[in-house]
Amino acid sequence: MREIVAATFVSLDGVMQAPGGPEEDQTGGFRLGGWIVNYGDDVTHRAVMENFAEPFDLLLGRKTYEIFAAHWPFTGDDGPIAEAFNRATKHVASRSGVALDWQNSVSLGDDVVARLAALKREDGPRLLIQGSGNLIQTLLRHDLIDEIKLMIFPLVLGSGKRLFGEGTMPAAMRLIDGKISPSGVVIGRYRRDGEVRPGSFAMAEPSRAEIARRRKWAAED
Image (cartoon, rainbow, N blue to C red):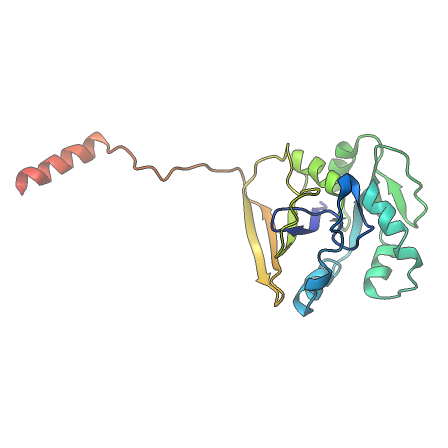
């Protein structure tokens, strides 16, 4: 069985759009791209590298695929991220045709949900989502994501594409690892923990037995 893991940068108000640079994604007039750049430190660097420490395939939406495909094959960088990204199989979700020219790139086809459900039943490396907000929304609605690794940056962006949007399926989550970097980035790994269990802080009405017990104590006093 394979697991789908989403590793995502978000702001305090849940925005995940264009973390890496001003030109990355200006959809909707977004002009604050590159908002993670000034928060790098040893802890955040190690947290990012941990995502690639085990074998993985990449799972990418169209926009993120085009950004990555225009960058990683041409950087001249032989570091661990470039090597891992170029070597990995890239599973690409797209409603429109996209040129899959980056090596080891394959389309998920017309029924992305069914294809990913089938991939999860197979043996193989983790399916690692990078960016790809629309794809994450689709997989959350169909309960296909096994783990979410969030790096929450200490700033508010006000607008932009959000990680948890309309249609997200309610779900309880369990924190399995957490740390805070010197620059204030909160890093947490979350896994599904069943259904949301609502409760109430309102005072419960006493049972008949409790009322009788109180009356007895009052009479004895």
